[in-house]
Length: 273
Image 1 (cartoon, rainbow, N blue to C red):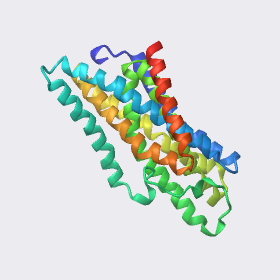
Image 2: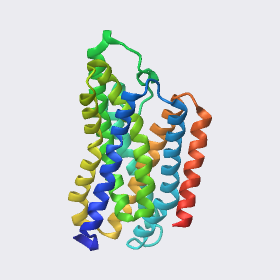
Image 3: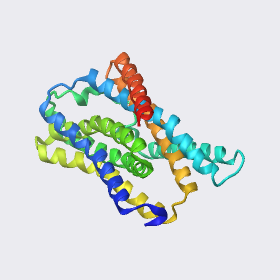
């Protein structure tokens, strides 16, 4: 394998990415068995996920990225290229947002009515179409997240596990958003769950693309660039999707408590491990 990356490390990274992606299925299952979702818990969980992502991005991934880049580029170039990678990652995910129609974009604010399982049989066709388009849009967004999870897993457990947990948490509401309209429109649980899981499979697909195209050229500098870009993606997702989504559920203080707890837990884990 290139540059000392063993097959075991690759399999672990792919497995963790698959685990994060398949957490959309948890959201899909919750939609079947709960009539009204606990929005206080959702607000807290999304705030927690944002706190983990923001803290690990600034306190672990960016210093690691700049350190790797500074091994290759002298003076302030390491810092400069780290910042270019960071904002380049933000630009990539922002471009994806721009290309996905706003009505089906999971990063845009929408009504929480879809999360309340109230019968609406008059609009079955529209509900099914909404669910399928949401599955497609979420899949598109999950693709770079899969690359991010994969790369973080290659860098070590201390970075990988909190990111996998954070992405898994934020994938659960996405699974609900896909599953509810399809289930309401068709009454078919297996079909709703199938579309939900397919949207999550975009994450391991992104990991495979990362493995195929990045690993043959893997160097310390490439690792630094990618880590910086991943940090940018994580921060963008936190500010553009997770925190607005948490506030959308109507429990501002639960979101802030989750955010602070996520940062504190991440700080403690880095201190201990």
